[in-house]
Length: 90
Image (cartoon, rainbow, N blue to C red; front, side):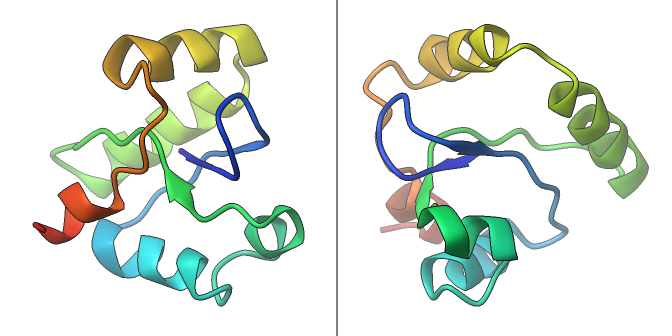
């Protein structure tokens, strides 16, 4: 999940290469939605064994109420820290 600030606008997407996709969003060459709302902070991610599982999870989460998404983020990342450095191994 990408955001622009803690408790800000949320974007849920799927990627085969998380680091590359987040880099696109940060460079403002990713989705139009991320560009429109300046969503450059990765605050939550889940690994999946197959792309089909990832897509199914993405679709399910997009149907969730916002409060459920916030609860999920805060359970794993209570500070809403940008996980970008973690993803690239810095």
